[in-house]
Amino acid sequence: MPSSIAHLLSKLNLEHITHSDIQPFFEVLHKETRVQITHEGSSFEGRSIKRISYGHGPIVILAWTQMHGNEATATASVFDLLDTLLQSSDKRLNNAQTLFTVHIVPMLNPDGAQRCIRHNAQGIDINRDAMAKQTPEGNILMHLVDTLQPNVAFNLHDQSPYYQCGTTGNPSTIAFLAPAFDIEKSVDDSRQLAMALIGRMTEAIYPHIEACVARYDDTFSPRSFGDRIAGKGAATILIESGAARGDPNRQIARSMNVIAILEAMSMLQDRHHQKISQAAFDKYQQQYWKIPENICETLSSLLIRGLHFSGVHSYQASISIKQTSRYSRQFYIDTVGDLHVQAGLVDYDASELTYDTGKTHTLNAPTIITNESYKQWLKQGVIQFQGETHHLSNQSDYQVMLNQPVGANSQALVLQQPAYFLMRKGKAIVAAVINGALIEID
Ligand SMILES: [Zn+2]
Image (tube, rainbow, N blue to C red):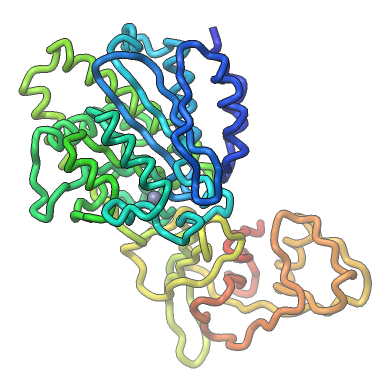
């Protein structure tokens, strides 16, 4: 039987989630007898921060999401998780409500979510406030940890789309960390458990995204909550949701979070019933160290490989193109040169193509641009238009450049500038980069 929130879940297939997006869940859950909703306090600007609790068992789990306001993926995941628990649809978990007490705080930073920014309304990064404790949101979290004393804590974030999984050329769709609680990166029983749980979780998600699971850097970060909470004896697990190719709303990471957390619960259940041998536990723990590292900033939105530049100094170079920020619609030229250690979410071999700045067309009459007509313009070498704004009606999926300075340098690209150029094979234009979008023409 579907749970009372099942019909709401598809509404969280969003690029970003705000406080108002999750209120319908609370309205429904208030009537659900198997969960308890507690108002834990308010954000700096007075938005409510609530805890949902399910079950009354001895294994206490605390999960919180979106302490960085612009990292919303796992907020959807925790409602998916709750739906699974309410439906009892994971058959491995027998009587989950008698074995577990699961506390969920979806969206710890609603003010940041409102603005789609990392920080809270004080401009403070809540995840650097674990020692100073000057944010209402950070205080709520620390109070929950101290009073609930979770056995396992899930700290759920999103990461930059430009993390690469090792050197696989793939994005890190999920990255895990069992955070260190001291500078020596000591491993106590709780951290061992966190590592083993992560090892087991990777087994569950590898069939779906094997080469896209990475291990986050474990440098001790004393101001961060994960590291502080690990020091309080909870097996603490950071999960970073990341990009996947062709998945702008991170729905793959959304579902991987759920699979991973359910797998962790399954292992905790087995462990509770002493069904996991020491050898198996050790194997899972070793598995943690075998996860490829999460490599920062070696991925880009679009990588053009080996493009030729003609002229007095002809040369060949690759080009990485990135978004100015995750939610922006603006792309820029990030790096030019030998980028063979890099990869692109879109990766394009241009080794037989030559760079072309394109030309400007002056509009004298109303012109409608569709996807098809735009390709025709590009094919003729036109990359931008000039003239009166009302003459141009853009009905295509692409951003069309109008009245922009372009082609100042016909032989080279300029770093940090918007990404618009053409690529030709011989004299024929065969592809274009239009604000980060690759358009192949015939
Ligand atoms: Zn974060």
